[in-house]
Image (cartoon, rainbow, N blue to C red):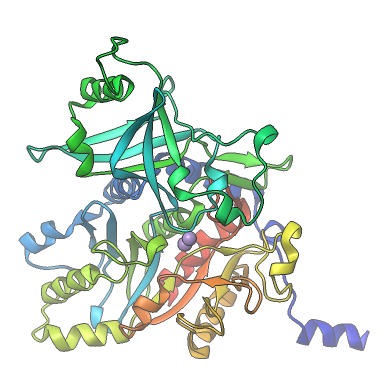
Length: 466
Ligand code: MN
Ligand code: MN
């Protein structure tokens, strides 16, 4: 008996979300997420959805407050960067005290159309693609695909293109070689080539007159022109993203899991968004920063390396009456904490050997906190200070958050990064915390509904209490 008491006192017991939460509450929350993920097939669409939700809950664009000339406690502000990244904040107290930020990313691995995409070969028209982010190329073959994005025409007007998610829309497919004839051997990364990821567009010629060359391609251009008023050169000034046409579905007989395209990292973006909306910050301002380009290194003016949100905070400092913005912004950043909200690898029973079972995150065991990511001996990561982990652990435990630790694979197995390091280099206290997935970066990633709900709850606790 004494030993049992000692065990309870000293050893950490991992619990699941399912033991602690009401199943109905989890299911209800999942419905909202499925709506979000089904609409947010690109980072632009995710921003659009986010803005609508924020406005519904009283958030106003930064310009509104700049015109007004001041901000007060309780004010809710948002700023959109180039339609692809967004910063939103609930003001509570002086910003110099620091801000609680949940930072996630809205982009997801996909195939982008090349600048000159349309080709015709043996009476088949195809669109050439260049993959974006880390994909296993074979996973994108012979599955239904959609096309979403924008085209900037010669006169500067922007056309929204969206094909594949309306009920009677066609979809696109990249065809794979039949097994009967596939004698290719070797590494999958060698066998499946990026230049072969060509989307089937059509097979009918605009004319069967022998004088007409590339008639199938011309027919496709004609269809695009009739639908969108665009010509071939317009496709050059465009961002057209090829994404799986796979609506989010419950997985398993117990419906405990959700499969969807783009959990990485829209699952952390949605949980952050809803946490901010529901938050009631006690000590200091609460915010979310949803960035783009994470899957290709966070470069570019919509990525996490860009400082647009700091510019917004500077303007807010001015609206709070700061007389020395340069000094005050440094204090604000140094006093701020950012939860780097990104997904991690779940301990998959089919692929146990890539993980350390003691440290890998498990589906259903709550939000996974990762002290570090990186590769080859923690290279290229924000390795969170013990003090930061201690603080987060304390507030999570106080509020009954179901949490676990996570590590992206066992030592020297591989690795990866998140946006965390781009904030710690600016002086913020940062730690990674998000949802564990199976099949990360695949066209149909799998998450636990329990973890989805618990991550929302954890972000809300952090935004309120930190
Ligand atoms: Mn991610
Ligand atoms: Mn990723």
